[in-house]
Image (cartoon, rainbow, N blue to C red):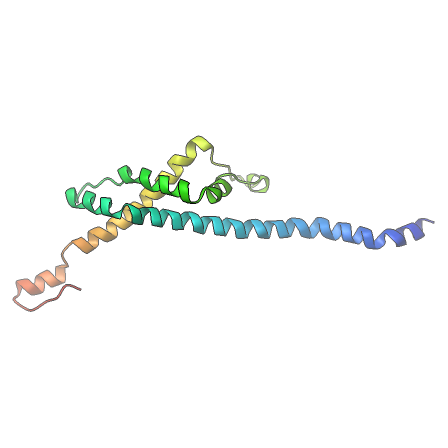
Length: 154
């Protein structure tokens, strides 16, 4: 009697066990893909935010090339990020239960702005360094000019 019942339930039990094993794995793959998309969206938003304030950044560098402060503009970039990718931010800032098991903690809402502004400041500093390098005279070109040779800045 039990053998017949188990024979009857066998395909269903296998399906239940298979679903219990495969669905969580597929869910993790979906989560990994969504994390990658959200991170890419966040970084694109940071770059476009920096692009939006580049003119102000250039003026800031030209006004004070030795001690420029990008922290003033990080708030504007953060505003752009919060306005353009709110879903990606919500997804990235709140960690699901299985990530918390590995010690990753969600970023509380009152700390999210500071976190994004810190990332924006990093992007702004990188852009400022690029701009500053382009604004500085090229030492080789200057040396050639000082020697009286024709030189063109690369």
